[in-house]
Image (tube, rainbow, N blue to C red):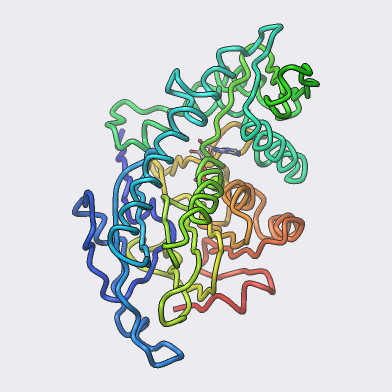
Length: 385
Ligand code: AMP
Ligand code: MG
């Protein structure tokens, strides 16, 4: 039985930020493979509309939320850039630790999973309550394709282990019966979110919501965590007026913000699923955008000619069988761009575009035969290479 694990960092960075000959002048930590994820396209950037050359940004690369975080920061000076970058990394680490990790016993998701089956349920932070409400709505609108209650099933496939790049020696797909049992615990209709009127003396607690999960039902926010993080990064950027422009890449999600000193647009490359070291096309964008990509080339195991990837079809509990190789969602709001790309991968172009439209999102599908399908609005931003 032959298998191999592949987790290329270039693949994890499903979209590539194209920067003009920018060196990692402020890099905290740089792994050799990461340099391959940034395409240096000097000529692309120097052809700005104003004729002015772009002042060079400060660049930082580090690890958070189990992925590579790359920050390209245009700021008043290096101190302002480094200050923002450090705060962003701290915030991402805190999000992981205190809110979304299912592994760390310090997180809300861990506590919610631990309280599954209890009568008391668990009191949620406002942020988490809003996130789960949005996830439940996306589950409904995607006809169940997107489901954050797949935790019991994702654990069986051990998807996070692959993502961490650990050895998967002895990998075998879960037995059918075990999978069926785990699948019984899934379904976002099982998440009961109950708003509790705050006691008068505790009104500062905001809008408390309690989550009840049935026994065995487990949350996995792997498909939305980076969107959640991008939303927080937008708020953090707004608190840092000395940062005038930024592109922050978190694994498969990228946030563009503000502008460059020469007002030339952001150029974001979309990874070619057939050659993850290259871009299949470029998005040209102005101002704030969120770009999320999901694909079967990001995390997977090939075993006996079958690709077991990390996007599961909630109908079967197994990796979604699809003609799609990769999906990129482009939208102004960050929270759900990540969730939408996962949902669209499973739904395919027809249903995926209808879903994306409901959220005002543009979407691009790279199909297994190499063809591209995209929403009408995407055409003004995307250019195939
Ligand atoms: P993404 O890379 O954003 O598409 O998210 C994939 C991750 O989301 C996986 O590694 C799982 O943790 C989780 N996941 C897999 N399938 C689904 C699904 N159908 N709905 C929601 N989350 C999923
Ligand atoms: Mg996603």
